[in-house]
Image 1 (tube, rainbow, N blue to C red):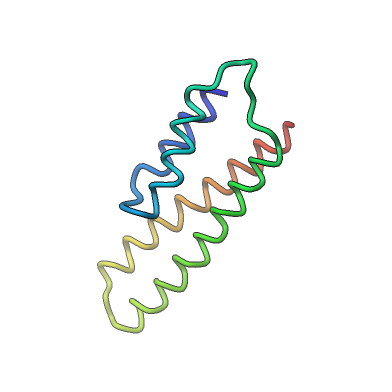
Image 2: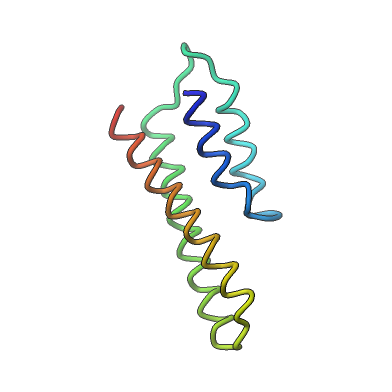
Length: 98
């Protein structure tokens, strides 16, 4: 479980400000879990859904900055979107193991 928390924490490291605050707090908590304390499959699913919602918001933001011709911000949003998609995939896979 500690590996899960460390791996997921790394995936939020590049997200700034308020977008990362919730995820960072959650993953710091996960890093302190012992073997007796496990993350339930329902919590993993909830975190995955949060990340999928973040992906949608990032894609909408990217559409706006692309329309404005802001290539630098568009590139940053691409990176954040990739990270959120990777977290969602990781959480899905973790939930399959039960």
